[in-house]
Length: 434
Image 1 (cartoon, rainbow, N blue to C red):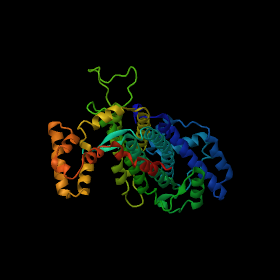
Image 2: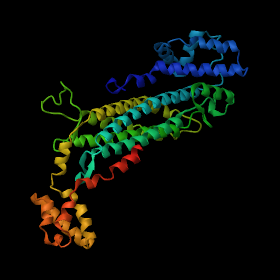
Image 3: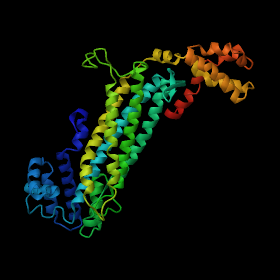
Image 4: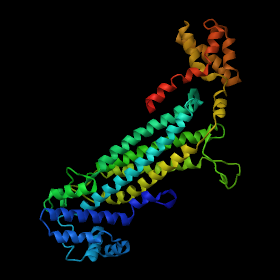
């Protein structure tokens, strides 16, 4: 994580201070549960909560860990320094380090999910607003980067809205899947820890007990979580790439907002570059980079090893922080995107009616031409537009073979732009509802 691509609320989730506060809550709730079961004295459980308002000294914990070479033991030692060795003697009873580490990670991922869900909702609101604004703003649709047929800018925004709406559902499922806790002791058998302790702690922390946790929570859950983040990142890049294309000088159908005083190039004062969406493309690569390591973490030795640990300590904060930043940046890009409807029409008409070729093809077949003959007639006139900058409608009107099947009125009618927008309302109802 670097400050340039970080937002404070998400960063705070992964701070050492937050982590140690969660560790404390897990241990304190576990003591309460054991006291309720009569396994430890009530006064000892109550004494642990004396540290509730304590700001755990990260430097001191790191100092202890330098000797113990074990982070959870270092934390427990520091906790005992606050509440007293006698009061702390039942803390962590029957538990193993993974009970604390994995349950804490689940809490952090749930909190990160809540922020990411809000981010996606904010982006959806921006996409919907721009879709409705440009519902009937006609632009050329492209396939293979080549002019195809007319569409609308509203449909482009609506398409991205539908994709992000699917991602919102995926994010909610991913959050649900990661919302499990485990306090099952060494190798997960509850030999030294009553399952009721796990149930109590999970209820207090808003988690569901992991049905079978070996010594850790199964990593297929985490793999699904990070795979979801990777999919969302790809959707971000999908939108960013479209905007980058639209901002190309030769296209200029839309561009990122260029603020007063902004500079596009240190060498060329005229430049207005799509820097935000290019940045989003790069961030998407970083986010997806976490997916393969998360998948590889699923395979562990026996009831546990720690090969997953170093991976998660990196990808959990970095990936959620990057995605939080990227979603927020994209929402702002969409909100402030400058649209150029005149340029869209200019681009669509660049090849003088050529984009209406399919309508003419269909009309010829309906008028009695075979499909092969119709295709040949349309294509030979289309090539004159490509190669000699002719007007497609004029060429069709002067082609006697075409006129054998179609009247002048038939041909001119096929160049009505409204034909291509007649189902926009239907599509919008599918995407946004009534």
